[in-house]
Length: 237
Length: 282
Image (tube, rainbow over all chains, first blue to last red; front, side, top):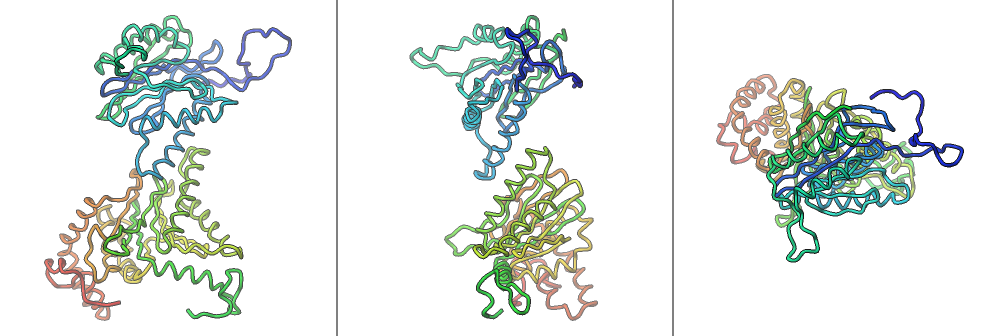
């Protein structure tokens, strides 16, 4: 990561009144995506970290494994993201000491929501996607806003490339509306390899038009055999 | 230990310069069932005798994981031990959060000792009635410490606390010089031998003892009963080697013959192991 000697303001655009002001937040950009399958979950995030119109590093991981079967991907302000990850890790250790087992993904989802809302009036500037296997071994994806509102779904994307990727996922994964009766399952009928290929395609597309997405994508796949990682380079412009 | 007029408060000195309440607390540790610890260059092993108050009840939990690199065995008032282990876990988690590195064992031990000392100098508190054997690994290698209710702490190569710990300690004193180069399996076998000393009448089984190990590259883990049973059975296999060694020692130390019988089943054949060690009473 390059050293920035002159502190830059988060807002490079001119303000409408005289006198710049300091912001506790910065947006380091990036996009996160997750897709849930019948017995797997794929979580991916690009590896670019930026500030303003500059790149800080091309090789930063936004993905954090919290439990054996649960992975958190977050875009936004990475300092807050890192603090949030450490907070969840500590809470998970306490849970393990008290219950003698790892937290399930749905339990972690609720904990993340509560942790985010706890700072409702000075939020974690983190846009999270939580992915993993639920208690029955099915893939689950939970998507959040900055203050903890969350929902389980079959797929999701967050971050600077969200608006470019989400419509593509909607088109490909044909998730039924929750208002449809009889209710349909929330996970999608793709195979694991198809899901990984779809992720690669969506990131490559997002990197074309979103300046904050690029350099590389880190893909994490969770299934009953464990966790494996893949990386793929993206355009560096 | 006899009752006298200076032992009601922990904050009252006796004319002999003693705090009797603290000593009574250490007595509580001696009444608890035994806990044993030993270390090599790469591993630390903790073993505990699990006493159940009746056949119907479950065993007391005496081995606790504090963090991936630290665990404890306790003897005495295990309720006090639970409270201390909650404190230790919390300190480890906080340290890891702030410094992103595991809390060095020696530092944690000092913090616990200071916490125990506070209870020896407040009139509205009582000392913790539990002794801890703290096993941990940090950058300086594997360590074994003892924490006392008095607020003292000591580092050991090997030690035992609790009732009938003297028998275990004698075994450890005889063998400890060989521990440093022991493999993990040998170290566990030594620990089980030491436990056997404390369990004089009973037969060693995975039902009445517990073992935990922490080592270089290996996080703290309490052995499950299957693995433990396998180790116990491997003790029988190693009996032949033990028997020959012990016969040699018997010649050199005739005064210690009785104890040798307890630990080895002496020159008696391997099969006798199943009937349980000697008839010797403490």
